[in-house]
Amino acid sequence: MSSASPRGALVVVEGLDRSGKSSQCQILVDHLNQSGSKAQYVKFPDRSTPTGKMINSYLTGSAQQDDHSIHLLFSANRWEAIQSILQMLEFGMNIIIDRYSFSGAVYSAAKDNPNLGLDWAWACEVGLPKPDLVLFLDLSSEEAARRGGYGEERYETQQMQSRVRALFQDLFKRLPNVNLKQINAGCSIDDVATEIRTTFGRFVEQAKLERPPEKLQTLSA
Ligand code: FDM
Ligand code: MG
Image 1: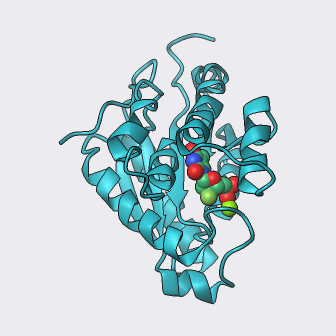
Image 2 (image 1 turned 90 degrees about the vertical axis):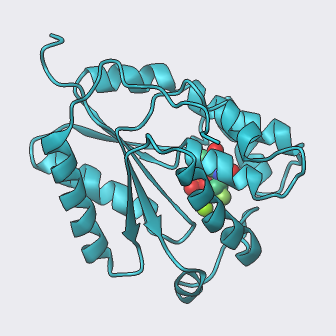
């Protein structure tokens, strides 16, 4: 592959449970593939790998883990995938990631463990590829509840979700170099999809993609 051809874009979709992340990622991936760009969906946690199986046991309640230990497993689950993601980007593939380091930091910090704040939680993400664009699908807890409440997994409680929502905003304020677009996820699937498509199109027109991608840095004060 000649290095003259553009690399793919690394796009992350973040948001609360019920915000429509997974559907919107798929809609964007399908749209890009149908319109002549290459795109691949990637989801974290990837529950298929050895670390992902441990994470799945924890989330479904069949295993217990220390808060730090599970946090590091979620991070390891990203680090182990990075070489293949970088290769796909270099190959010109756009990678659309459903949850990334931002979920990693805020869900762990939302546990209110005094020894596991945002700074500690973010530290093991430093050095991972920095997304070229982060789309945050924002949803109020009222709208989430109207969508049928939460499921059975660990973290799927109203209290946890409202802490997570606030912590996402705290985290983004401390990452001024991240290219973030907040999207109101309270409208219809079609309206959200249109806004994402427009945002992605505008981003691609202006983007100058460094090779290799930049890296995530420590949080600002
Ligand atoms: N989650 C997800 C974390 O706690 N840390 C992480 O690094 C990631 C990627 O895992 F509650 C949480 C977020 C969610 C749970 O995610 C499972 P999905 O998207 O519902 O599978
Ligand atoms: Mg979930």
